[in-house]
Amino acid sequence: MREECKHFQSRTYDSGEVARFCRLDLAPDAPWKCPEDCPSYAPRYADVGWDHGSLVEPAIEDMPDVPDGEAASLLDAAEEIVTAVGPDVLAEVRRDEERSGRRWWRRRR
Image (cartoon, rainbow, N blue to C red; front, side):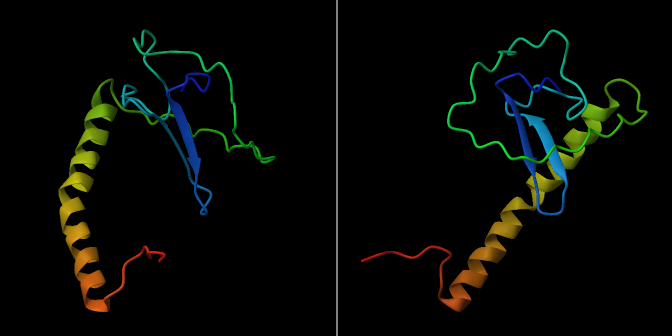
């Protein structure tokens, strides 16, 4: 991935897992590489207001051996699975909130 692109984003979770991706979802082989002729590539000019940690990000894993185009279709299938269960998970969370009578946010009066 082109880390100098303004659409590149990276997140490190408590488990140490790192997610690297294009915010515009234009990199079918993410997190390993961007398209060479990406029409939305734009260099990041400044990191204004960002806090940079002292830790070094882990190296990107090697790209798996998959034929061209199959990585994108595999990731699309995984995205469809996650999207399909989203409404069920949201409904379950709302049911739990109604049972407990509490919300995750509180109003200040």
